[in-house]
Image 1: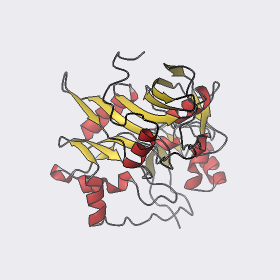
Image 2 (image 1 turned 30 degrees about the vertical axis):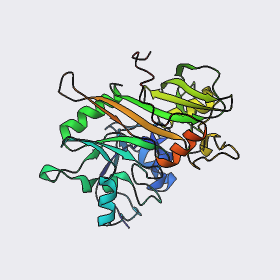
Image 3 (image 1 turned 45 degrees about the horizontal axis):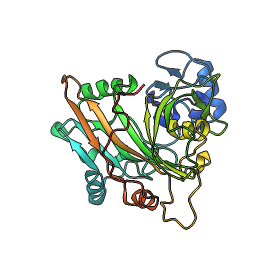
Image 4 (image 1 turned 90 degrees about the vertical axis):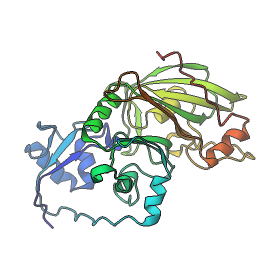
Length: 324
């Protein structure tokens, strides 16, 4: 099989911080990737790079034609059930910007062995002029809650910058164990690629700046706590890494980061207890107008919250003072 066309691929969120040559292993043999990089045939944002260059979400990677390229899968048409499914996730739609309430176990984008994902379903939300929305940011597959997509190219660009420049307030809810020592605070700890390709870690030497605010809303003794997080930056697995490594309070059900800590005899969801709860987003080009959307806890997480007598419907903004 031969690839005959130059490809331009934008780095997805789940590849942020990875080495370029390792990320390319999904597309070509590792040795070939290193050779194409060294000879300048693979470029990032139009520039020559090294095989060990760390890539960032949104960067443009140029991949030249090469032998033995994997055959592209033919896209399966969406079924009526799939179209209805993603339409049921819509919490806000003004004709351009759409806010979804993504369930857990649905990936944001496709990848190896990933057949069902939000990006594949977006054509079902095509609006005027048959414009299908595009992803603005991503959520981990295991995380439920709010995602933003948009239809108009200019809005897509503006929203992308807003997320990068921290103009968006996105509040996450989580159950962690044990209860953090501090009731609230700010975590500043750079995040980089971990030893395994699918894990990130706090990396003071080569990691990227990451800042997360947190506040303990309620607790069950010292064993479990309901915590709100506000990630001020958007690093891969940021909240999960900061909770596990800095607070030493992993998110319940997060097997990847030592959070497989469900309580015995308590009715709890058997998955990652992390939910993108609330989004406060200034409307691009419209002064003093904002989108403020809240995603209710899914039924499985609501069981966990109520098992500890935590309020699953709390409406307060824990960071109403504007943050730090």
